Amino acid sequence: MNEQFAIAIHGGAGTLHRERFSQSVVQQYEKALRQALQAGLHILQNGGRSLDAVETAVMELEDCPFFNAGRGAVFNADGGHTLDAAIMDGSTLAAGAVAALSGFKSPIQVARAVMERTRYVLLSGQGAAEFAREQGMEEATADYFYTDLRYHQWKKKQENERDQSADLNFGTVGAVALDKEGNLAAATSTGGLTNKQYGRVGDSPIIGCGTYANNNTCAVSCTGDGEHFIRAVAAYDISCLIEYKLLTLPEACAYSIQRLEKINGRGGLIAIDRWGNIQMPYNSEGMYRACCNVNGEITIRIFE
Ligand code: ASP
Image (cartoon, rainbow, N blue to C red; front, side, top):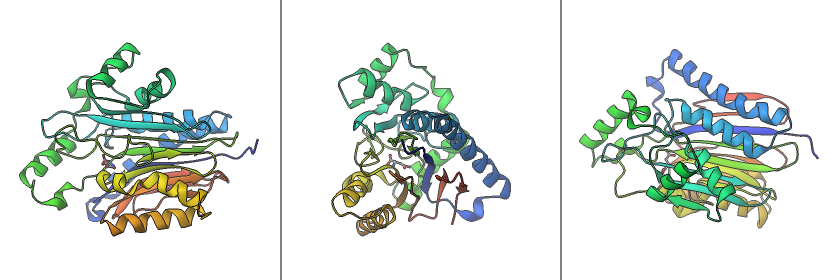
């Protein structure tokens, strides 16, 4: 037992225009991040599992309408919401995920149920919803997911479909943690990209791309342009750089972001290693993020 614990969370990276953030908006976001961080931290302080800490922190963020996950998720092209989520236990490499799930409040809870109650890793679409219903997961109607902000972003995006810069309304929430037993875990939940079509699924529920955890290396949760994170196999890449190339966590994260940049990928990630070192790099203008390190020091930031 190492007795040390630490946690990091994110609420997405993307084109966050600093000039559009008044002091009171910044404070609202910081408050929401603090609340989610504290929820996860509370579990770790009491000797709970990192898996429970990341799930709980992500559930808090899913419930908060400011972030693109659960309530407040972005709109699809057809006006609906389809949600992706994944969770991974670094002690066993067990993982569970859902893709294109509609009608349930907490996709991360469903992902955890996939991990613990099925022999599968990833369930999608109607099948995922059928499973969630069978498991008695809390359902939600379309109006639960509606927010004015996302509605206006969607309308704007539809008007500027060809303007790629209008596409960068990233969101996504995630958490990574180390518990007192030395176990790492990662969780990610998202509404994906505004105005997405054709059953598009991003990196978040793809193990190794947007989410990964392995006690021997690190736990990672990504946010950003999912197609690039999938092509870069970003989360697993960081784990591999530590395992095979013996890089430190900061080196591995920096290298991985560089590789992402080579294919014009934008976004960020949070990562924690087995000693509780935390990294929260991004190459977008900002990333909603917060962490508590092994010394109990709390950091909450949106921009630099
Ligand atoms: N990575 C997510 C996706 O592509 C989006 C995001 O992080 O905002 O689905």
